[in-house]
Amino acid sequence: MEVTGSINRGWTRPLIVLFVALLGGLLFSSGTVAAHADEVGGNYGFQFSGNVRNDGTPLKGVKISVNGNGYKAEVATDDKGRWKIGVPTKGTYTITLDESTLPTGIIVVQGGSSIQAEFGLTTNKSVNFFLGAGVRETTSFLDQFIQRSVTGLSFGLLLALAAIGLSLIFGTTGLNNFAHAEMVTFGALATLTFAVDLAWPLWLALIAAVLLSGTFGFALDAGLWAPLRRKGVGLIPMMIVSIGLSLALRYLYQYLYGGSTRQLPGADGKDLKFGAILLSPLDLISMGISIAAVLGVAFFLLRTRLGKATRAVSDNPSLAAASGIDVDRVIRIVWVIGGALAGLSGILFAFYRPGVSWDMGFQILLLIFAAVTLGGLGTAFGALIGSLVVGFFIEISTLWIPSDMKYVGALAILIIVLLVRPQGILGRKERIG
Image (cartoon, rainbow, N blue to C red; front, side, top):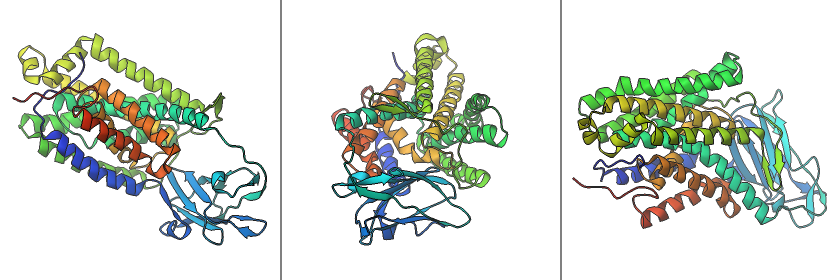
């Protein structure tokens, strides 16, 4: 038996679709930027620029991307081979020239297609690539597919931690908690405080951040959600409260930590090659931690007495209470687990991006809701499967569509699955009455 919500929630799915659509617009507007040279960089004080020429001949339409400090942007060179990209903060960035957009027979002959660049005493930095005639080495479609599949698995696993926590909370309370994004951010910010500001050893900072995230979930329930439940506040007003809480926490984080993106220690590392697969040590550690956490949740739900009580409360709260189960205690424990899982997901996402920022949880909130809805509302194992599907299709879709549109593939799969199976992959049809 699995955690499933059987409360009459006929209004839930339309509301989720509405709010996910609104959040999707916000997320897409704040994600990766792709435009022509005269459309990127005007709103930021720090500028990277350059010229792409071959023997003095300007090359038009060559794609240049900037990645670093939690920011990504892409631009195409203009008629004169010029490009310019603005970045929000001063720091080190990776500037990459997409060699597939160069004319046939032209390659980067010196320095590589990716350059690490940082600003000096000025706010402008010129970056140029050395081009010449040559034969371009390409990666086969199969190798790209394998690499993207593994990357999607890694991202899907860290996404699953947040999605499982959200699904457990929804299953036991019926609450669509839009502040779950800030619980994700909380874990990353706590790690940043302990590991960077207080200079604790990274392993100790990680443990402390996860424990503090669980405490944060406990505090939210004890201080806000439990009193609202006792007063009989409906689920729709509580959902609106969660949106307000999300906004308040997000801008509190910005006030306390600033708007810049900061790095956790150990974010850089040499990649390891396994055939066609290229992974960093952090990728392997992240996947190992995610799998261990998911197995721990599965053992809790299936093998422990408290886990069985959690499933009973999720299935029918009234019957569980009549059977002698302390429903409030179960819900409180679920909030602790949900907070800890969200915090752990935020920590792993900070290494994956890489970087910690005040709104990083909000950036993946749409994907978390998509994973929960795809897997089946209130089903913990469904959230896991939904997350893996979302992560896989996000990465695989970049083989055919631009990277700044990669969320479209995951949402298309979500729509298709819900049209065929409205209750989700592992959900069950809702009971009425």
